[in-house]
Length: 305
Image (cartoon, rainbow, N blue to C red; front, side, top):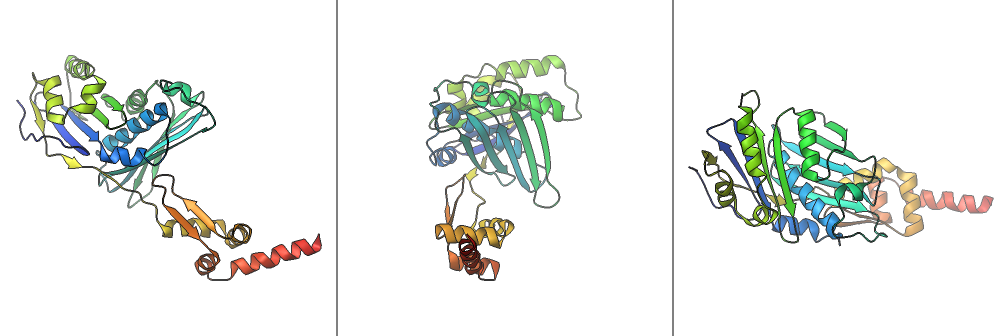
């Protein structure tokens, strides 16, 4: 019997627990959020699918953060797919992007391992709002985002975890089961629950709300659903952050770029916001006329040659 249930809407995270064994779970269904991520770039279908799965995975993992901050999941490769990255926050916001060799035609059904090639890495970064960041890096293991995550969790968290993910043009969804830490569970019980979760089809995962899905899988168990939490797309880029990046580059390099190009344009990889800094913007940023200095140095070089 399920209690505290509520029909899940799009872009929601639903937590649940098994009252008859020490296992917790999470269900995520993204629609508008996923479309907001995917519409920014013409992703090949195989990369589009993998990025959707990683976006959901980041939301699932970030929901367990014990601090205010961000969780970043990256899959890095040396094949046609160079990087998938998804970032989710403790406030249930997320963003994601991918980089790949856009000169290559990619088959719709190309597997993730083939996209990434040899020597791929899985990177998970935790960034608390207060305190130092932490990063874990392991070699890729498995031929899907879900399998890579389960392998990572087994090695780092040492908690039995089952994850299934799916994404298409309209939805990106995921289901996570995890044994509660420091509590004993009969191996047969965990095997049964993960086996039941394994019967879930991709269409069911993408289309069904949390309550219907969990009843379909676990109606013989005592499952308690909690009120769903809204998930939103949010990008943390800003003009101030781009300005900080330019300051790190230094006045000489930035001044020379403005002399050569007329202005500096920076586009966000996640939301494609466009930030333009002209000579007045750059001079104000550095508190001196770095553009005039760069012009003078360029003129001196030309005279010397």
